Length: 298
Image 1 (tube, rainbow, N blue to C red):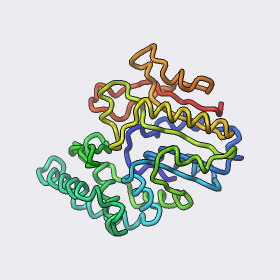
Image 2: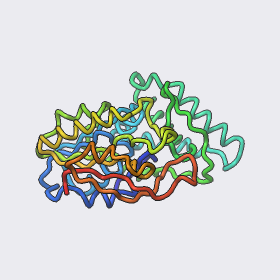
Image 3: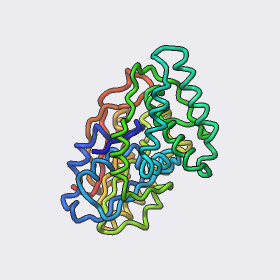
Image 4: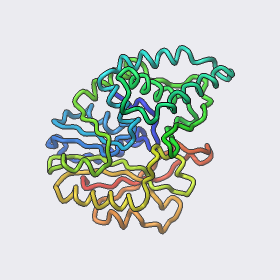
């Protein structure tokens, strides 16, 4: 079974059972599946293992992420070859050489931020291998870029980083065989939606505090106005007869009377489920919180 090849802010591996238990009861009748914010793809890979859809569309605004999906769909073995070479060259834990090697890869990655759309296939393959390498060796497994799109996460302290294997990447390639990959915002999926569509929305979470913005995976922020635009889009999805599930943070974790999402999605099912926060800058702040699952399937 294919599994996420990157650790991603807001990754859904630990919520898979909660999400899948809310899939539409008539899922077998749906011919199209859409993820407007694919991220790490945990729900995508889980669902593709369970059902063959006629059409699958995934979207993300992060060009580095969609490039990873595109190259793994067509060239997983070539990506593995490059990644394997980097892993072999990675010096021992806590050595000066290890740090130097990490920052040399990061510098190389940052030099080509503005060039990814004009790169040759060989260079794209190398870049995807670098992205996976940096993701698995950086601090806390973050993918974070600054306003110029440069990767700015320092080296992590992992003694033995957990890299995907050759078989892992081949399984990703197999799962993506019939998936159409789009670089674009959630609104662009509208043309593919009808009453036989199921969508899973996993937008950038609304921060629980001002400092939570550090998990941003894109140079483009997703603020409350964007959350409201998404809610209107979801209303349109519902009116088309499509089924959806949407996840987001629960503001009541920090402000008990914050009804932002309860008001925004009034009329839909809203469940609060427990989740361990997987990515936070301070270990003391990683613990059980409630997250929201919103939908019209239950």
